[in-house]
Image (cartoon, rainbow, N blue to C red; front, side, top):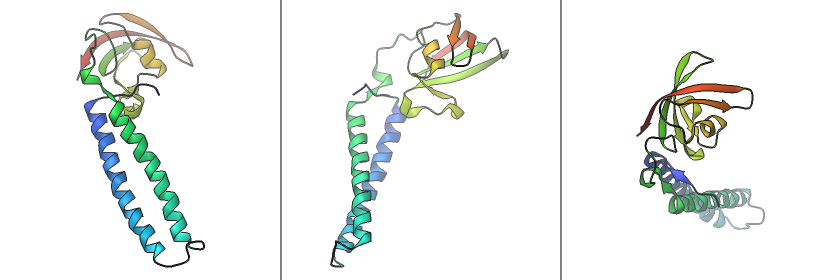
Length: 156
């Protein structure tokens, strides 16, 4: 299993999702018990559906519990603060667009490109990782090569 890196916010989001799933599990258990009291389970569609849904919820609960137990919090990792890494907010000047862009480099679980949060495994982030303030970087993207100048690196 690959390492899972989360920010404090990402960790909290996963924890909240786990809480909601545990509530769903309890509701499904009540639904199953109610269906069980109706008698013949072999032809009880409500019972079968609730059992299947509960199994899916239990799998997701297990996945999230493992993620929370094994996750490495970005804030606790020894990061080189003057170079781009996981958890860095990067401001760069895109020479082809002639404008500045800002992205926060996150884990895959926390990525939301529309909100300016990109996964460190994305081609753009891979091209930025390890670079320092003021460097001019050529980033190979699937469609083209992009040239950027690193303007600011901040760790939140």
